[in-house]
Length: 208
Image (cartoon, rainbow, N blue to C red):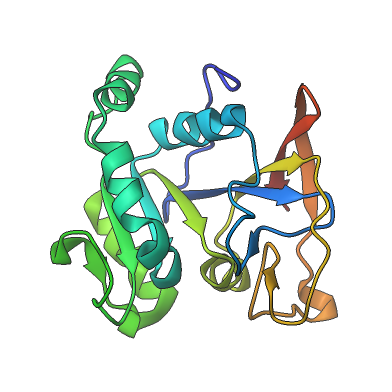
């Protein structure tokens, strides 16, 4: 494991939120065309599973859920992943929620779809009431932007893939979409660790 014995600080008033993304060197986390996915290596995917194994629940936004919801459900149900969680003392079944006002195109149980009518604060209360301590928010970039706007992301795990995609207007997404933080609210990060595998870098940041 890249992060054996991973520990997170405890929050008294809300869950601890962390996120995991993979980005190209030029800052692209997604291209809206075929042929550009996956961005990271097999090792990056293993790290994704590893970070999921430490979570008490997993959150996706509506767009990400429509694109990868079915794949995510299959991945979470694999015996190897359940064994990984059980070895860590976790419930083998990782609760998976999608924040979306629409249910069309979502290939998961409707009981796992959360309507964002109360916004991010409403979601936080829901998760707090469920007793979740460590919550993994995988995005997409719009959902991550909403969490950052509310100062609710505590740590960021970021894989830098040794690729440059370039850009065409409207064709790529960066780590955060839909938000430009004002100067007084720019998010500053403190580097906690750097790990290297071949030419990929695995960064862990604390949001200050």
